Length: 330
Image 1 (cartoon, rainbow, N blue to C red):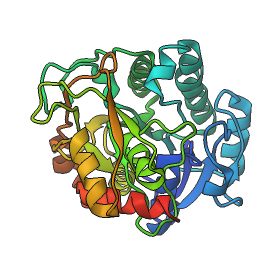
Image 2 (image 1 turned 180 degrees about the horizontal axis):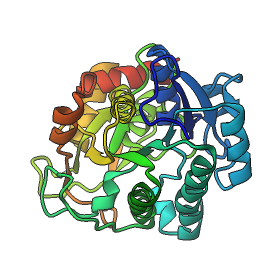
Image 3 (image 1 turned 45 degrees about the vertical axis):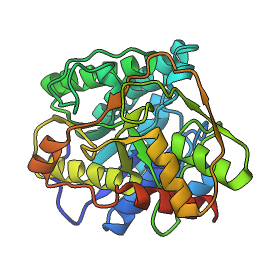
């Protein structure tokens, strides 16, 4: 079994879902920081072109033996686990797909880690584990209360990680966040979902094409009637994963952290920012509220900032939109 505190000269990280949006951006940040990286992705929702072919291993999470082979052939010191389906609406139509991929797939990954002696993992969780929180900004002390199958699938993984720590000494850091946004400042990676469901790329597409985007709800109890969300730049999010990785490398204990700015922007403010950055009109229409959408969701990341020294540096809304616009016009 490997020592938990690996030495600086041995820093190979296995990134699952590294061909996806956040995974590919984090892979770039890891490489920039001097880490070696091996990416595991089944390419069902990731993109082959987002990964250096020499680093990509096309393996499904449910293929435990395949994961073991990758880990034995490419000995790694830790795992950053992104591979998951993330569409809340879809999870409420086909929950079986989410529990199979997100939960059972994670169990397969943890099993492979045990078989190969890897005992450190950073897990890409979600603030959806809180559901409709009673207090905002949301702290880590809020109880589990998911309101959709996606959030529940992540809660189940967090609970598994607790038991794997107690029983097997497999240490984890779970990072919970809502709205990843923006693109790599050097335009090396960005959002490329199909279909796209995230607000900022949809608004940018409306600015590009002139086709109206539908915004859901303008009668919320907020200053302008539209939902308020905490947007975190994907580069800041990637750095949070590296901070968590470094905590485990130093022997840090298993922890759960929120990742956010502590400041929310309304949907209307995002539209206004896109107009300012692009210099274009943004045609839109208001649709009805989406079921289950709370008026205000903002994360309290005080614990992460105090304990791991992380802080957001690129998450000003204008900066987020500027990098996303650059990516959209690459």
